[in-house]
Image 1 (cartoon, rainbow over the protein chains, first blue to last red):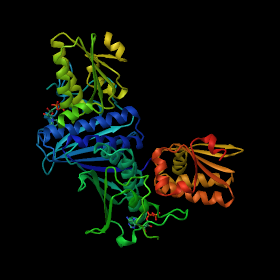
Image 2: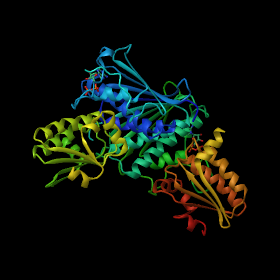
Image 3: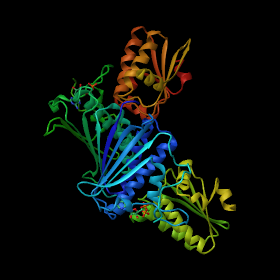
Length: 157
Length: 157
Length: 118
Length: 118
Ligand SMILES: Nc1ncnc2c1ncn2[C@@H]1O[C@H](COP(=O)(O)OP(=O)(O)O)[C@@H](O)[C@H]1O
Ligand SMILES: Nc1ncnc2c1ncn2[C@@H]1O[C@H](COP(=O)(O)OP(=O)(O)O)[C@@H](O)[C@H]1O
């Protein structure tokens, strides 16, 4: 599977759409050559990103647009990867304010961003040009991964 | 799952994208309450429609746009269903020329349209306004279905 | 009604034993289902079982809203000195516990039998 | 190379016996894979086995390009008076044979053992 592929999904900000996106992402990851751990990690990160758009970008409103683009890419050292962009028209926030938290204490909240930053190789939040937020992230095959224990780059929130 | 949902997928006319669409469609069908036979039939019909766009609409070119919209609907008698539209920017043909064929003889070809018309409850081809073809089709839960033997409405080609 | 339906879809079984209450879940524990899951688990926690055992053998997927729900319920169960024990995690679900470092806080067993003695 | 890879991915095993040649396929037989499948089956048909047995036990999905491929190969096999026999169809795959009415033309068995005697 060497030629590149690109798929765009446009959903509304309804949590009911998430399983459909997960299925599409998982299948694409498999076709691109991702193994179990990498495919699961990618699916999880995208799901968390969408949940955050629904909850924080749109305050729970279920009928707002979210655009997801999945594209196969290659790392500079030749590894296969998938680049994901998630675009919303919701609340604009300072990208630097989107941080996970230290996990020294057991409490809910702040886990989504922690997960995204833990499993993805590149994560970049930006304000969208026509409003809303734009999240761009990349995962490469056999990198990072869900069970590694590398130090996170998060500041506590 | 009573509220309606809507998902849009934009792919290029590359057969490699088909499994991703199939996975998304199957998951959505399940969430909408489709059983095995109905979900399989819907997936098959959409896959055939996309294959036809790739082969006939675009003559095999792999980089052209195809838009797929999936929306939950209800029949007049209250059954759940999924409406699908498939839009391309390819060759425009007379909608009446898109027919399957009688299956009295074993030969390849002409099976895709036969399948689509057999398993879907509504099938309508139109020329798109900005060019290309537009296929609109609907499948309801527990109707038609892949193993029924109802007479087809096809004229031989 | 809609909520009830979601709960019923998610909680496959609640079984009360002297060692604790086993709650068997089914389906994806995601943003869509976590609110109903929270309500169901708070109800069980209200009965103050010695152990609250969550059997995830039939849970293919979980996200941060799911583990967040578990954390919140864990605080309630800990408050009355109960134990919260997990079993039946697939490697996929386990990895989410690991990424969020909750595998360090929760008791995780392979089987329900082990969980009832944990 | 790309084609070879696709063939290898799709054809799991080719086993020649006196009763016929068993070709075990794996993966989705769709528009993407049918050309490679056609090439592989034409090669086997060229050896003129008494029976060409297609084991689809590991084929989760098939579309009209797949059944069209089988039809085309069937004509070749019939031309030298060989038999083409299918086995291991899931109900999903079987339903595609039914919709296209090919279940009436092809010999379909449950198991490979039955197919070798069909
Ligand atoms: N798409 C987004 N739009 C606006 N704010 C966001 C977005 N995603 C995350 N955030 C901010 O980052 C914080 C951390 O998010 P997260 O780690 O998912 O935890 P939680 O959702 O439990 O608060 C959120 O509380 C929110 O303030
Ligand atoms: N999207 C499309 N655009 C243009 N022509 C089409 C399209 N879909 C189907 N057709 C026409 O309908 C015929 C029957 O299609 P089908 O039943 O899928 O069989 P096959 O693809 O094997 O020819 C095609 O040969 C083609 O002429």
